[in-house]
Length: 297
Image (cartoon, rainbow, N blue to C red):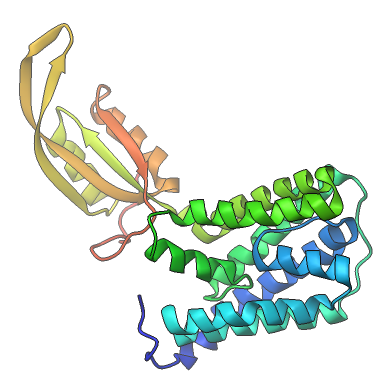
């Protein structure tokens, strides 16, 4: 956790790439709300979902609600995560309210399935781009992290629980059908957010067990420019020849998912019977992750 006493990194806040991600993300989210979700009473999860429910049922200005409901979460973010993050998130929220205030878009379609899918895609793209820019437009992500660090539940479990409550409220006010379509919208949005945030750079652990372990190590390091970790192990123990075993090096490397297929194909050229398995990694830190090497043909 970053200390709340950390100074604001103004260089990061005004970084052109970060500003581009945040501004583009805000416009995507605004189009999703104005052209798809709001006219059809479809919800996203989190703060946006709460704001839409209150806006449609009590007539309170949506922009005002987005600011007021996010303020406590931004304060928690300031204390828990860091001042730079809080400033970027506050900028994202205020920019969204400004864009929503001036943007006027006619509903693009009346087809509920298209609204749920494309509204979710645009909203998820917007949220993902803003996260890549260093901010948030939905304070629920902050409170989710808080509960995750102070409870036995995972972040995904907490998020699903909190948003389930929002969807139940939507069912009461807007009907079961609207709530079900809102769930589809939300599901599409979170999947799109994950894709935009991780994208092609999502890291994957590739573990290889091969009789040609020395050649495989040389291939990964010299041809693909990847760092490896090596565990001493044994291969064999097959059902029909359980008593036969051989010492070997178990090789593990971290790659992006775009590289997995090429590396697996190259390994199979060396050892067609090589055994490998792939695991998704949530976070990678330290070591040598990226290195420019020769491209394998």
